Length: 416
Image (cartoon, rainbow, N blue to C red; front, side, top):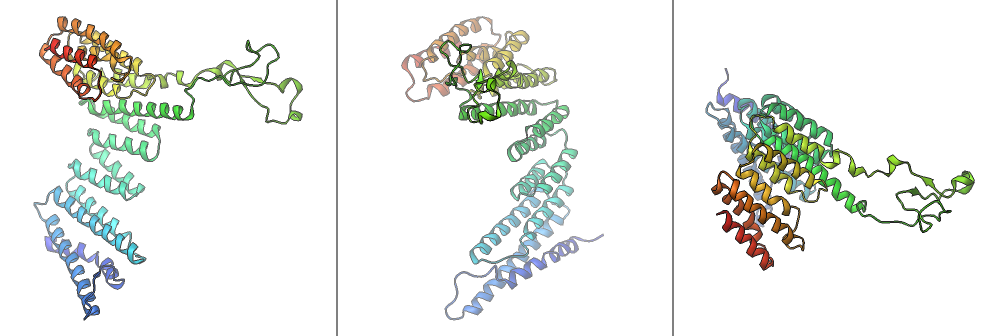
């Protein structure tokens, strides 16, 4: 069996071609030259840099090949190789040097992390470093290989499923693949709430993106557009709306029959608003929440975590329906829990801006619910703590109405 020195020498010898190219193309040389002996100064500096690289690599190789090596040793080794690769790239750009071994640097980084994950397969942080390194290097094939290996070894770790889903959504914009990762992950990770909440959050992000795109395109603005003149069977003013007919005046009249020139009626299915479909009305987030209710980790605090996560997406049109669904289940299952009453009190004001004119009226509804909560809650101290947690950020807002400020402080005093 080879010793530590033999293993270190083996891996060091594999980096010799890259170091030789550094010397031949003078990538690592001094920037300031000695005016008396410029050539000697340049060669001396070049030699010092190469020696420093070899010595540093030798130290790392002996450390990671030793019996007591840790995942941190491999992570530090990979970080040093990453900095070296970054320095090589900057010098090649500045000196306009075409480096044939530009792929050798990332390959060495992957090699170090690969050895580290094989020696310490149970370290999640090292696997995540490996994935992040492959992602930044834009090595899709390597990323997918590492991700598959990590998930196979740690199917019950939510971090890998979540990372895979985010990568699919952000890099490939593929919500179908992201959902597939999250669905498979929730089958394995049924002991903690993290992945379930993140799965619902993923769907809310998708709904928020759709809402923003529709707003940018102007699809959510109800406007009546004047169309071609009607012959009596259209609207009351002789014009039809854009929802009822499609203008075809840009088509040559010779290609159509006379009875087709004026307008083409749209059937009832085409008139339907695409936002009325169940998926865009929050059916998927609510289904995820309902599935989470059947898991062993579910409790009132988890339901409140779902409620708080949903409440952030105020741009989603179906948010009131989703929040009401969560609140109804909490009132039915945990009617006297502080988490339930916290959500119950917050519900009227969640979608409103504290500076808006509608906020005081909604706050009055919350105040009436506070009286009900004080009488029925089983743990008033916990309710007071939760109430202060969501009221204090509002009180810190600048230009907050004085009346609203007084009511919020009154709510805190009542629950305390």
